[in-house]
Image 1: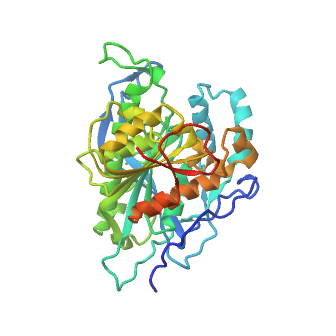
Image 2: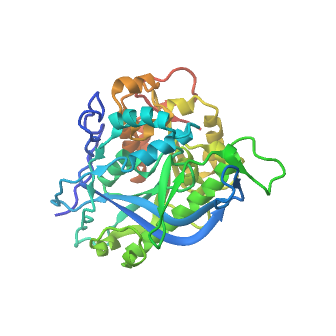
Image 3: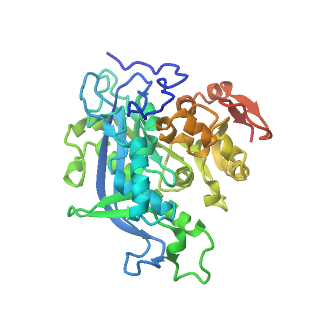
Amino acid sequence: MSDPEPPHVEILSKRSPWGAILNRTLPNYSGPLPVGVCDVELPVPRQTFGAFTHKKMPDAEAGLAMHTVLFSIFYPAQQGWSTTKRVVWFPKLDQTINGFLKMAKRTPSLLYKTIAYPLAAAAIYGTTFPAKPNAPLRELEPSNPEKKWPLIIFSHGVGCSRLMYSAFCGEMASRGYIVCAIEHRDGTSPSSTIVTEDGRAQKLDWLQWSDLDWPDLETQPADDTVLRHQQIKLRIAEIEGVIKAMTRLSRGEDITKTSIDTPDFDWSRWRSVDTNKPIIAGHSLGGSAAIAAAADHRFDFGSVLAFDPAVQRLEPWSLPIPAPLLVINSEEYTKGSEFQLLAKVVKYATSSLVFSIGGATHPSFSDVFLILPSYLNRRTGLRIDSDKVISLCVRAATQFLNGNGQRAKEMAQTSSGVEGKMEAGAFIYHKL
């Protein structure tokens, strides 16, 4: 039996007005295929980025160091494989809360913990998403040996982590894509953990630019720009590490011999992953990293997907982007100064499509607003149902990746400017 064609999907599974507060699970994926998820962490050749030191920790390792790459793979799972287990959205709640407090420049003292822990636990503790942990990869039809699963590499935004985009990654997997969501250990996550080859765990928390000293610079940075440039370089190195790992799998090599954390299942099925021209995607700083990676001569990407890319981190930009580029922006982003910078960057792409979602905010591409009640979402400025933001991204992305860019434009309103308030839920195509 051949794999079913993805249906024309308008919205995700209906989300409760209470978000995930009551049922503690994100909406089911709306594609035709069940979704599996697994974590992989592999050692890589050590690299360092940036010559800064920590003012408060003079003995800490200088600069950003890459020891391993950690990523979650969302993929089409074997039909009929059943398990009662689901994946916890925030598996290390206390470590993550401490990281968020540091992001907010609040020392994780007893007072703050007393306040933050119960609030966070009430909102997200035990929340899961509907992917099957460590399920076998779905086998392709033997009668079509040339068919392979296309590969997407996803880079998260500042203040986020690899699992905070599980809705988008899972939706794409349910439509036949292998999605590798990277956990960037560049100091932009609230908190992360690196496991070394000898099994030692090392915590890496939020990195505040003002806590750093750059001995090689005559003038110390006045903002986070210098740090962000180094973080993008590290992200590109991590992207390279993930692509190399997936390429090894596609060649039938056994990565479990060198893996620190890899599930024990039949990796031979992963020969069916197409790593020839992968797709690079990301949100915010992750969108910037996706664009920067696409322009890097080390890679040959088939397409680029960027959501609210922080293109100011790429200034000045003058490099060709040798791949089709899809950019989807929130209304908040479109009304800001960065949209004008984006208009300059997209002209360097082989081809580009730029859309905006009326009523969407910059963080609404993540899972957060699928979890929170609608009332709280509205209080943050979100004027559109959070599931509609994800569904518009998924629908436009699948059409774009299937070569139907014209159909994506047909589902949108056309605009030559960004004046005035956008209608909530409107999908707008920009002629740039």
